[in-house]
Length: 57
Image 1: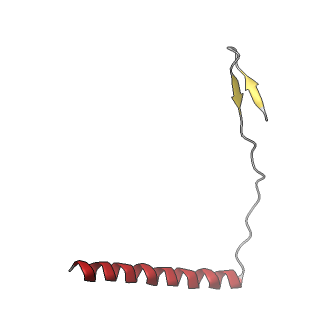
Image 2: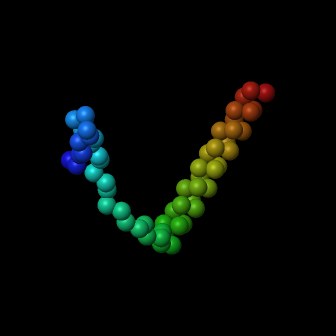
Image 3: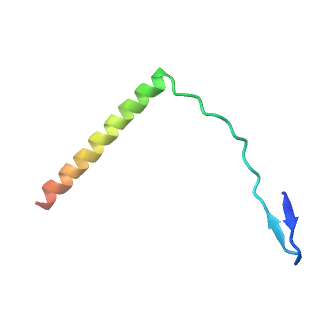
């Protein structure tokens, strides 16, 4: 583990940095999956809001 020593004898530890890489763009199948999951999530949230308002009224 890399560290430095200060004048007073204190140690400063530094975390190991992860390897950096550039992400690949999603392919057509992943884009469709994102669209389907986003739509299902929006429907779920909308239905929960609808139920909450209908129960509270």
